[in-house]
Length: 225
Ligand code: SF4
Ligand code: SF4
Ligand SMILES: [Zn+2]
Image 1 (tube, protein in one colour):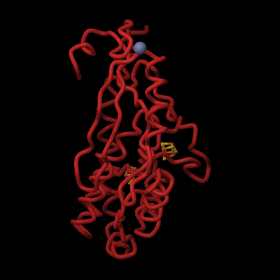
Image 2: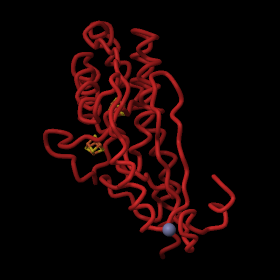
Image 3: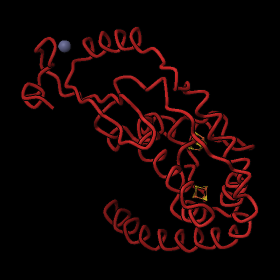
Image 4: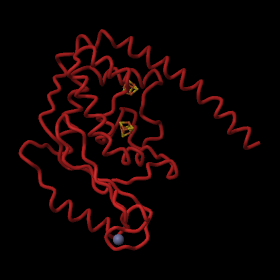
């Protein structure tokens, strides 16, 4: 961030602003994402967003956001990881917040990049046990690609405004690197063999989380009395 940004003024027009933006650029396979930071007023952010979208043309080795979601969805289905997640939700330990506006009876109705890239540690460890290289790639996608849409995830899951990430995305990436070589079929039999163990870990962790949350809830309730 530059010196002007730290003074709480828009770095384009010098009007006061407290809004911070970030923009993921140059997403390259296996590399850390480059994140540009800005302090901007709403008007200048809108102008910069428009100019970014005009200049944001795909390179030959890139795929669109929709293609990326399809690639990842195919991987979850072909590897059987999606079936483990379905069972995880059935046993009440899934990671989709119940208040998400896209959570329907048949599961997710509109995935974003954050959600399609997300994998809990229990499932990631299982994937890595089947194929260490694939596990590293899945972990990289989660941390470097998925995080660009974390704010979107917060919005659709109705995280209260005060608890949301302070930095807003200036513009969501529209192009992603390829090829994402994720041969789900290859790990399917071995991952199926680990499913019960993964689900047992999720149950254990869930119980531990509840034990940690319970005293906080009681303190909150006592504060209201
Ligand atoms: S917590 Fe893990 S296993 Fe459960 S739904 Fe989420 S990613 Fe899948
Ligand atoms: S948008 Fe994300 S959190 Fe909501 S139901 Fe879909 S996968 Fe779950
Ligand atoms: Zn401005």
